[in-house]
Length: 50
Image (tube, rainbow, N blue to C red; front, side):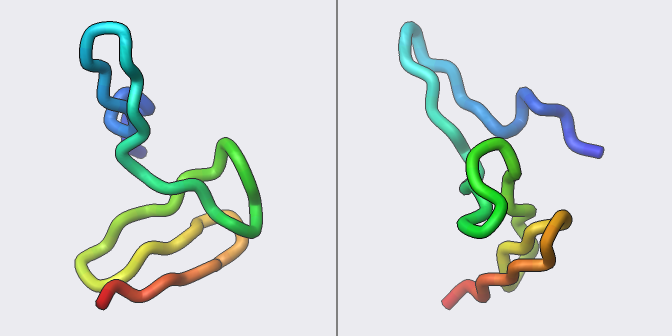
């Protein structure tokens, strides 16, 4: 399981998300990044990279 610190980038006073949220599940559920796709482990939503 990935560490939650890998999903955010802190630069001074700014915090930036490095992964996208699942559009079906909403805020708090991140999409896993694979070589050719993004996928949600909770609902199974898949988005293919171009």
